[in-house]
Image (cartoon, rainbow, N blue to C red; front, top):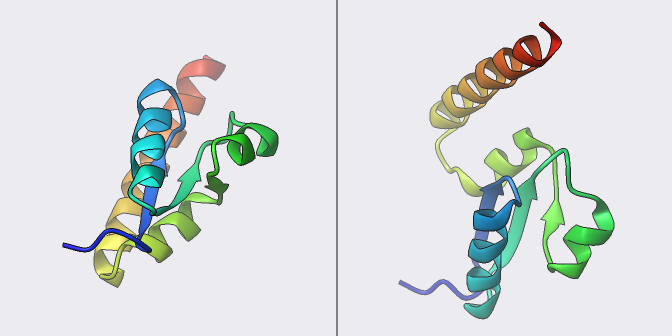
Length: 87
């Protein structure tokens, strides 16, 4: 499988996401990530392009039905986390 030139989508650029991004860049992959807590400056330093969750899924998931399911699942988790931190 040729990975060079492919796009890797990440959700989160914590310790694990950052290391996965580093490995992907070593394989000459483009890295696209969603992380609302990471600044554009930090992303640029890591050579990662930040994007909204929907865009990450649109660029890396070919199947439209699977994209909808993943986005729906993500929204449920995000809502749960927001409610948990608010309460």
